Amino acid sequence: MGRGPSGAPVAAYGRAMRDLSPRLPSSPRLPSSPGFWRSPLRGPWFTSVLGTVLLVGITVLFVTGLVSYAAYNPGLDPVNDKTPDKGILGFYLFAWPTDPVWLYRLTQGVHVTLGLVLIPVLLAKLWSVVPRLFTLPPVRSLAHGLERISLLLLVGGALFEFVTGVLNIQLEYLFPGSFYPLHFYGAWVFFAAFAVHAVLKTPRALRNLRAMREERDDLVAPRPAAPTVTRRGALWFVGGGSLLMFATNAGRSFDGPLRATAVLSPHGGPEPGNGPNGFQINKTAAHVGIDPAETREDTWRLVVTGRAGTVRLSRAELLAMEQHSAALPIACVEGWSTADQWWRGVRLRDLAALVGHEDDPPDVFVESLQRRGAFRRGALRANQVADPRSLLALYVNGEELSPDHGHPARIIVPAAPGVLNTKWVARLTFGDLG
Amino acid sequence: MKRVRGTYGLRVTRAGIGSPFQILLLGCSFALAGYAGLRLLADDWLGVVLWFAGAALLHDLVLLPLYSLADRVLTRGTATVHRRERTSYVRFPAACSGLLLLVWFPLVGGRVDASYAGVTGLSAEGFLTRWLLITAVLFGGSALLLAGRLLRSATKRRSPDVH
Image 1 (cartoon, rainbow over the protein chains, first blue to last red):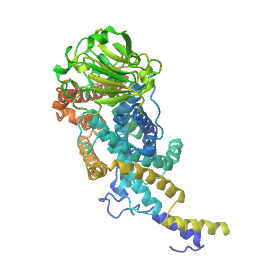
Image 2: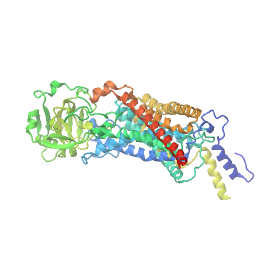
Image 3: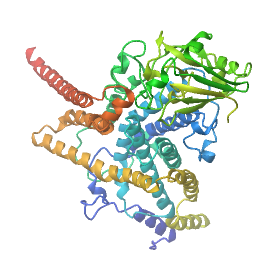
């Protein structure tokens, strides 16, 4: 610490300047010298615009992600919960409603489509700040050192979340473990770093956006290359990438011609078949090990248990009960969904009444004939059972369910995540669960 | 004088430690990250650490330098033919095509063909063809746009001579 002619304050000022100052490099060949970075686009305004978009977008991703976890009703029964050791991270959980019927279709469609749309923005944002990865000295103070560790969690966390999400919707399970815990706990690690980053940087980002002139900043190249595009042009470039992602993915949330526009994404393109059963299939009967011999008219029986005892029903006996209809969509955690399909079958609350729960339908534990699959068993909450549109469906769009859509009988519940609409149902056990 | 000394004292502290508010905030963040991180690492901790750090390193030290280099080669190329201002007409379709490949490489590259078809009952074929078609449309559209602009500016330049 030097001493200026007028004493300490000047010395302090000099010190502060030196800390910020490996500004004129000895060798511009090293990424640690600012002269190494030549792009005339980098600067606080560009980074601030991208950062502000991500602040809003990632907040929506985080919230819709938490909502999706709540939609599984993890507190109801361990079979619904893939992250049972969540502890306080489940503080916000609530009973998932059945209205509006498109609720999960909307929240999860937004989660996945918005995530895909934000990929170009994330990449551009990381590009815009990459010189800071190499700044020297690596640590200027305790706070700065801690912030850099936090930035590793931020960047690593963001990429981890986007990569696991993008791989999961393509059924490419490369990641080290089951998707649910990785994506859920990873989201919290990421969010911890994201929140502190937002608090520390948002005021400055907003100042940069309001300021008319470009402020000097370590991101601005000291000897920029001649531009080939303006900063505004570069933003259009990123926005164009996002628009492309939107245009080639949003169709996964609709049927028919709109789905056909999702040309590169899973469950985009043409429907799997024609006719009443031609809509999207999450998992085929063959994949989850359904033995056709077990679903025949003479072999399949639905076992329903409640406080009054157990009944075994054939398909013919189910058809003899009062039949009801409901127009409901299928919406998958992978972000695709179908339009409303017209389901017909027996109300879940009528089945509850059959085994002694006449006036107060309780929760139900559902078991499938599936040999494989994380959701071959699922639990539905009392409010879902009580909804008059919740069915054990035998027909869809006027035709018997096809094997891939759960023949002989499947659950369909308004607004529930796809996997809780159990197919090939073998057993229903009514009673209080969670 | 008193005020100045106060400022000086603060500066000295900040040089070594930094903003106490920031440290407090980061402490809270690490506590939450640690709580979730312990659960994240519960099963295959090494694999998760490799993926977490590996994603950041792979992006910062491989992907970003690679596309920066590609862009530099492209800019040099257009500069050599004195068409530097038209770089974006190649850059944009190339970047979009690369983005689609980066996101959908398991489907486009045929890595998940068997499982995708078996699980969903959908055809896994055609992703590569469709990606190539999109790439062609992007480059073709960009070329048309450029041709249109050149034609318009040529017409504009000629029109004063007509009158």
